[in-house]
Image (tube, rainbow, N blue to C red; front, side, top):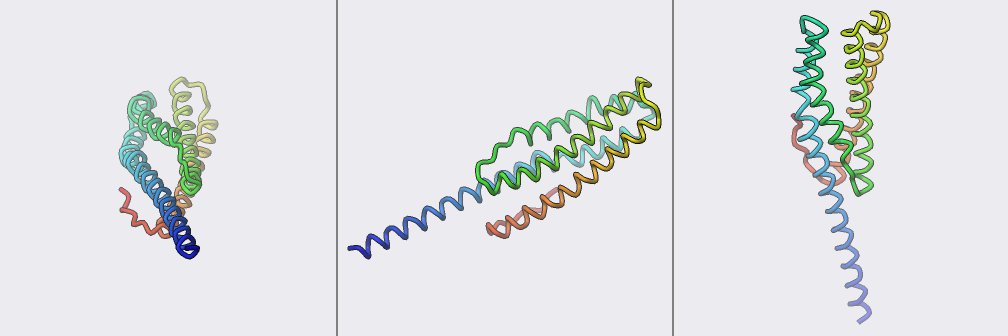
Length: 169
């Protein structure tokens, strides 16, 4: 009888561990898929709008594109990331990396937008603008490095949890 009780206890513990791992794995998949759907899916459009803004005929036209087309997408991404509330420690750690990446990226966009606004209003010198733009470009590079770190983390987690990641768009 004690053997059956011990065997039953071991099986119950194993099932409990398997259920916990499944929930964590499912949360990880859901989080990553949400990131791909809500963040990565907008990157091409953001890059296109950035190019459109850069090739504008005037600062006013560039500001209009950024205000009405580009920043709403950037804000959507920031709002999405800020709304995420992971539960498991694994997903919290991954979210922390992605959130830090997006925060740095968002700050760079805001810096360039603010400079453009000041250029339109003629309230900044060219030297000051160039300095802020260089700082913003450094933030973009830092965000890219943070993205690579987060990409590596999800690859490691996928291996650890036996997940197959789809190619990101």
